[in-house]
Image 1 (cartoon, rainbow, N blue to C red):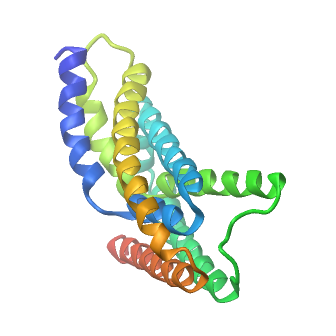
Image 2: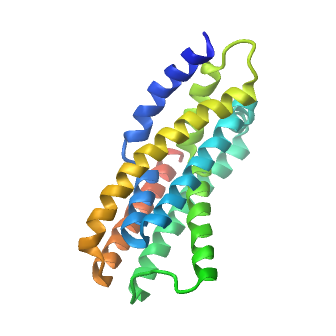
Length: 211
């Protein structure tokens, strides 16, 4: 198998995962509708960063070690649902106290908000066991003999990240148009509550799957 064949084969599999609605799509859509295009773009790049880290880990065998270590795997399977539940509850709680449109008023506040969006996207991907399982199952199979595992892992995960960013761009553009009709406090609070409920649902689903 050549490098080009490996990339094409992995991209075909990754494309299916990319377009299936899930946690990442929920986060980006919520950011676009509630916080605006800039926040959504930063969230998307955070998710892509998480994918790159998982790709490198899978290529180096760290993800396989996670699968082999019961304690390490338990930490991820417990930490992931808890983090998703925390995000969901936070969104719902904040929606009851929010009175404005959620935009930052100073450069410092805006910078901190963008960093939170980026870190949320990154950690959500890193603490999602399903992403780890996907990379464990696929990336090692698409590393041609004689190539650097780390380089191929980063290349393949970069392909997945790029595909995700393109997909997220479509979502953000569509959401930005819809936001013009939803740009008032009540609608944004409802969106936050719906997104929070979905995130809690993902967390509960993951927790039940790994009981």
